[in-house]
Length: 308
Image 1 (cartoon, one colour):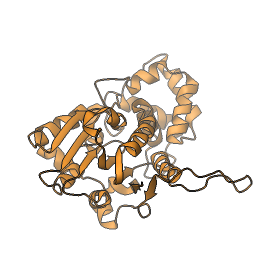
Image 2 (cartoon, one colour):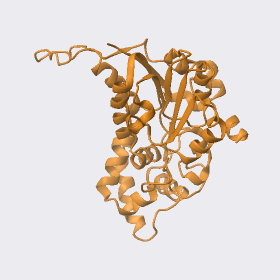
Image 3 (tube, one colour):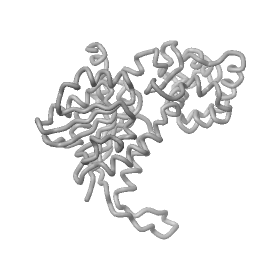
């Protein structure tokens, strides 16, 4: 376990935890425990009356949380998607802060058998919660050509989505696509090496992962739940890793900020009462962090505060 923790560097650790403005006696939720980097930092700021709730959909992350934190009376742990935070009795009294570190974690990427990466040949799984749902291989085995193309385009912005989808359907008729190397090779054959320094399968693997794990739906449900659970003055600190996530977070904060919506060509739409206020602007990893952890390069942190 210690080796895994050394490999995993929490992204924008100081900035994300500072955004929570942790109070010693407050109640906080880390909805994406991962390997606990952010959780440790929050817990170090809590006093004996503070409370830290930990969630993750990955059974291995929960095993790490249980091993390290289960004996701490200030901590409660739940194996579940953060989108279900409102269903946990521990959140019923409200929260002073919620932290979400979205997307796939370094340990998930680095463990080839999980099937998230095309860097090593492995079963094409991609499930964050390996106890439920269909794998990427299952999806590709039954989805129509249009369904596959739509997933690659919508979630990966892959401009060769139709060509890739057609090749997948043609190839699976003879050989089911069950391994990461098999899929990566197919994509490289279809589109070639078009972007220097970037594997041609990058966008497709991202798209399939988002589809398999229902990540954008989970984010939508999680944001709505967080808004209701936060106490007045409570903070929401969210790290995103691709434009689809960040756009959803940005628009959610904007849409609950009480600003008048509508186009310049039409009449203004009456603003709903403000319930959230952005705290500062979007933040990005420092040059120092990028030099230590290149995987942080696409991270964006947004912080918001619950209003009366």
